[in-house]
Length: 489
Image 1 (tube, helix red, strand yellow):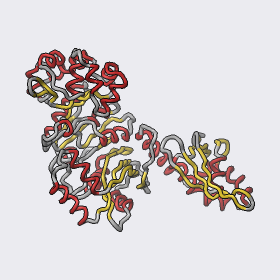
Image 2: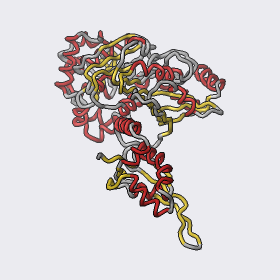
Image 3: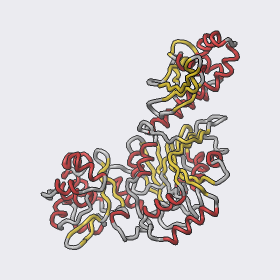
């Protein structure tokens, strides 16, 4: 750990006593100053903390990135001694006072996460090769996407500061976390101890430290950045060429999961000129035997992508590094880079489901609940043949909306296009024909689907068998998307 066990206890005491928590800070600053802090505008927060009591001092040092008098910092951190705080790197001398040496971030209701200070807070200072990332955008995406159901065992691959493991500790009886960086593991151990959690921490590259072991849930925010395989910062660079880390994790998944277990990770993948990106990524899961849902949430062009990641580590002023990276993209015909979430489940099906798709719309949080529901629906569908689908009762999802486009003709308005919209959950939209509209509109849970089709067959002058043959795949699709829901018998 970064601190001794006694030092961790002392730091927790100081933070708790001062109410240096997300809620405590928000109450102290008020909504205007809190909103300003979120935009890196500290003016109102500094005015609200001018009296420099312990909470004010901690806010000024660790939130507003100020240098404060040593006596005030010592009083705010007590009973943790300034000597131990300096030795741990928690604070550092700057000018005639002390400033933050590490990012101590209040998180959640009463959690704290220790990480390195981001590049933006130390302009001109190069990041450590084993820089430990705090709570960034990708971290939050993974937190929101993870399925939060109780499990016996959970694994965090590439734990960094331990944020994902911290969440796993709320719904897993045993948490294991790995990282290639011993330095990162020291941060993770400190985060765990500071928050009263106990994890098994193992050093090594991705899955290597847990070879031969299985888990109920595996999550990973890995070093997924796509490029020529150059490694300068371990939180970002895997050392694998291109997007191979995503394929590597997919191949490892069957050996990591218990029966019914789930693995979820973030990934980048390349869009290659002349190739279908979805087919390419789908190839990662061939032969795994796992249900797989790959969701592409963002797409960036190579220039924007390189700029983003060079800025992230303070390398934006290195034109040669940028040129080499862009040349690699050009040589491999990479026209764009996708970012998204991979979710896998070992469900024991003979014919596992594979979906690779764009999902750019805003999704109702938490995303993890939406993903869990998708897997639940897959299990339900796999347990039923066509006759099983026809025997079930369905009801339309709450709040569905129908949008129509029509053209005025000699006989009045003629409907050209009908789009069914889901205002909640995954917020899918689906263009439908009149028959599907009638099927969804009649799904009130009162009749089995076969009886519902009998009524539609009469209305459309077709046989029930003909309609049933066509309806099977349509109903399965509507269930998978969540437009209609099976009703328990």
